[in-house]
Image 1 (cartoon, rainbow, N blue to C red):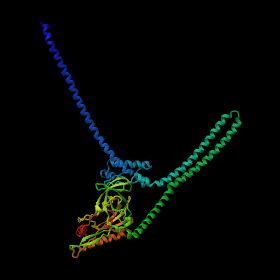
Image 2: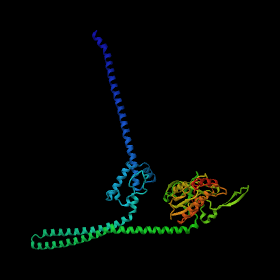
Image 3: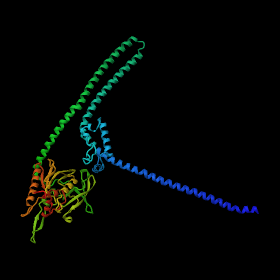
Image 4: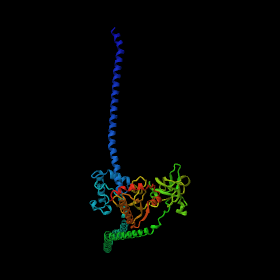
Length: 514
């Protein structure tokens, strides 16, 4: 019976052993799973912690790249603005700039930035006091300034190298003489006396050649010293004289330009067409044959005229309109200036010879709209070169009773036209300076003063101030032109207000007049 009891308990024992082993295996697997999850979480946290400083390093590197681009002179306007906005005195940008200047000074054989030639003193430090001024030119432009001088230095180096080559040839000749003497000694074993005589003669020849060589070396050294004096003293003096002559030539040119501008005062008209319409897209946008190659930029405007306009002349675009006479009838009125088919504004530069423009004004799009082959005019812009202008008077370009002269300045600058100065009506002073390069004095509106106006004395003073400012500016030889003529000839969009809005626009300036 005892033996049978043991056999009966055997399955139970086996089941218990299997349960224990299964439990242990499950526990080991569960533990290993938890360990793996903890490892994954730790790896993820480590990767996240590693990415943050690397991202910060990447951003620092990108900002430092902007600093290097500005220093080299290849930065865009946005790059300079970024440095100007973000850089501060004594920060990493300022420290990096100091390193660059120190490296430049060392490369040019100077101890510090202040010892550099004036040509390379273009960006000393980043300081908040001066508004973080960022130079518009860098090492590339400085190199271009001294290209002429480098040509002289290159010629001097060529002469020096020629002399050095002659010296090397003489050294080779002496070496050949020494080799000949050695060879002679080897072959003259039995001819001692003759060998001695020959050796003496050879040595004498060597001495003579050596003396000649020393003499030539001295002569060449003297010539090199003379060339160094030429480079360090004579040439800088000649260059200084040439700079004085160049300044005088520029002044003479300025006077001639001013004289020509005076002679052309009465001949102002539309310039030659600057481009033409290539295509009118279904959405109404215009393709023109001008692009980045000639400096086209978004915001530039043009007046659109038909292709036969140069032959037919301005009168072909002067139309007769019917205008109310205020008594229920109409009177005919003829345009005083040629009327373009449309006015367009560039909004995207596609390629070197293609830009897209939107129509900002098109009086008769069905019968007289802009189309393929039409010509583009802008009297103040000629293929990459914008004219210099000055503004004087009241410029309310949208009829809202507010003087928009500062808006006009921004719009013209955006097109690439330089506004040398504008007349501030409140301070009655020029902002900027009219020079001999100023081609046009663009005159805004003045005030029409009715009888009985309580502000008549102040308004008369304002009109006198505008007239005086325009007269002083015209003494520089600039051509005077009304804003209507100027804006029409360049395709600039504006809307004239009435006398009431014109008076409102002048109100801030009148407040300062007694």
